[in-house]
Length: 115
Length: 109
Image (cartoon, rainbow over all chains, first blue to last red; front, side, top):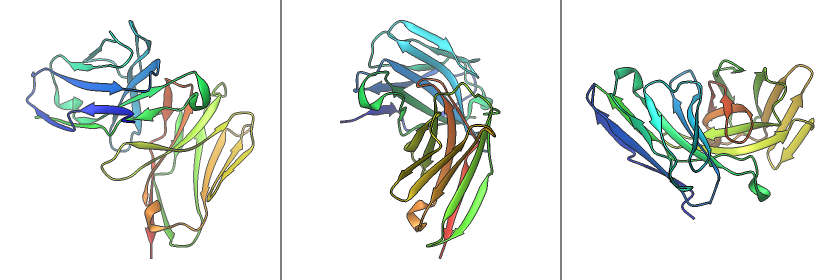
């Protein structure tokens, strides 16, 4: 059971470049979220989705876009990377159903540097 | 997150108990969580507690919840070197969690 898979694990971008961070889960979870982790600040919610076709903004959405065309995938797009977006990005999924209700499962993270 | 606060560092001797404290502000949260992050890894759920419980014990882990003071603690008994990590307190619902800044626990011999 792969759980939550994030790609790539590492990425270096130049200011102004665009890229997409991939996230996929194989647990049929309806909820998916993107967080960024910065030193001394814990994790902050960027965007989340409660189901295919439905997304909403979290605490720090500026500079990021998301879409949810399938239950499995929740990509995060940086349209024009800025040094302030240097961070570690985590994707998570969860469900309202069954014994794992209300538990978020996290991917291993993508470490992004913007020069 | 600004709604969840925890101390940043804890140093403990191997074999002693560790206690990590957390305060939160959202009294409507149904669940409160403790996650563990080892270097270079993602977050691993350690344990969680329903907001209507006072205590939960799971092997070496004991979670205490004081709803009146909005205070959550995690006690690790017989702390081992493998317990060295960052521990995050979190509150919220299943797709929107607010995290503390994390407590870095260092276990010394």
